[in-house]
Length: 306
Figure: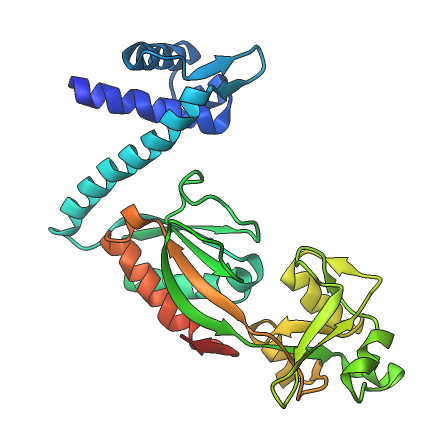
């Protein structure tokens, strides 16, 4: 291996250690001895000229200089990988891995099946799917594309707007028969609401009226959940009324296990977006997956395309 190759190899070891914080764990992942990992780090620090890591008996942490160097290493290694992949893409069918992060309920209900079809069309592309409702750092976590539900803060990522997810109020017929159906929005404060604990402001319902005005209703409930699939089950089981995305409950509405409440009053729609690491956007297999998902997700119930 030439000097440049050795340097990149040491950088990759450093990035792994920075992310794992444990030398022995990285040694196992790389299939090398812990002494080799230590040597790689020492050689890199000697070449750079500053300490990059602070070591204790239990954990390895980044120094201030190491934190900046880590960010730059990620960008450099991504560019090196991208250059090699683009060269391969020009000569053969797209192949390799795409790392996709997706909001959990949408991933389980719909996106997973979309990936099955995508891989049937492109058998040489591997998809690593991470389902989470947390706002992860794409670069730090090695993710190429993230499907995000909700408003986005300013970001350095490339944005592909998919559309808006329409929401509605629903309840189980058994619950509504027992409690009576609300006739106007103000009635909602007297009903149990299935509350999403990981959604800001979920103790209030903000609704759009038929005349275009908006109103806010205070709500409460004995059940708080932090996952869309748990909310779906709670609503179907008659644990209360709640706002939900149409794509999450359309089948339950079709078979009568849920019904729409106050159909003329709707919670605000939620933007749905694909975020792509800019350095990965030009890679053929990433482009293929982004375009495919954008087209297929736009067909889901309640998605209003951009």
